[in-house]
View (cartoon, rainbow, N blue to C red):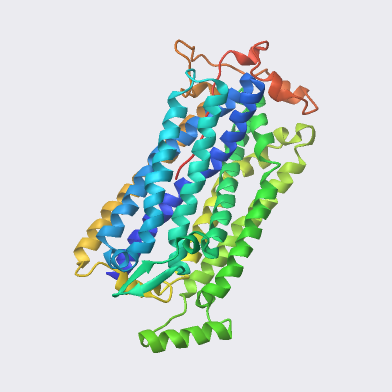
Length: 449
């Protein structure tokens, strides 16, 4: 039963994180796109925001379902955990729900329905608030998760853990280092998504070369830096976890062995080192990151004089590489969570004691099948819609469409991608009302799984 309960939570947590990674990554780029529109007033930047924003809204909306499923599981399957550390663990989660998530949803609603109703500046402020509340949501969730990995600011009284220092909880180095690492990894995910969609259109010559070349210019040069930053922040996080959860890395140090001996004396005989699967996940996490770095560096070198547009094999690789950050994200999350085993709260509560008392095998199996099927359906629907609307290009976006605005296809200047040798100020020309490229406007914003 314990294995099924853990498998159930692992499936929903991983699925939810896939939505979250894309959401955070896309909203970061959307802020840049719309801010450029707010400053310059150029239609090209508005089209970009509308197109990528529609993909973000799709991902965000479907990702909410996986988050709700996770909340159900805390009460249904893991009441032993909530009863023991609910006074501490529940505080940041409550703040995340009441402040961060509700605020984010409110600002997002204003942003979605504020097109053509708000001024450029006010509408852009709404998107900035969406991004800031999304980042704060990550922080509060990882504050709760950081406590499970490195308990701080508490006291044990009457068989329960109670919060004594909220500031120490919020400044937990385990949570802070994980927050920065995950935000960076999410922006990498958003980068590869934008690069992949843009590469597909450039390779297929769909008639929007200028639009997607502009998106490629925004994301691709930054991606190698972002991958390096993610790796550096991951190293910082590992530095903290080696000190705080040394048994995660097996019998690599005397400190880990001493801590395992201490756990044996306090909680009885058992294996207090993480399963070997955790170390495997750590290794798997690194491999996609190396390929990501290799592909984007090579592609960036071919951006000079737009040579990348003529490298069809490389464009195909950039499209296929959209899955690499997801592989790395999943492996990293498995390494972090499986590495904590056999603890639900490191050094305080075993995972076997965190399960709801009296829970039957049939109940866990049934909920596993129901919740597992639900998240699979959400993932399939999400990617089906993302692929469909991404293929339609900027003219397929309904987000921000003015009343009576024509949905007719607008094609960027034919052959201009091949004729122009410099990068110039193409963003200013593309979609400008003075050029044929501006017969329609369309773009988009944020992600959420």
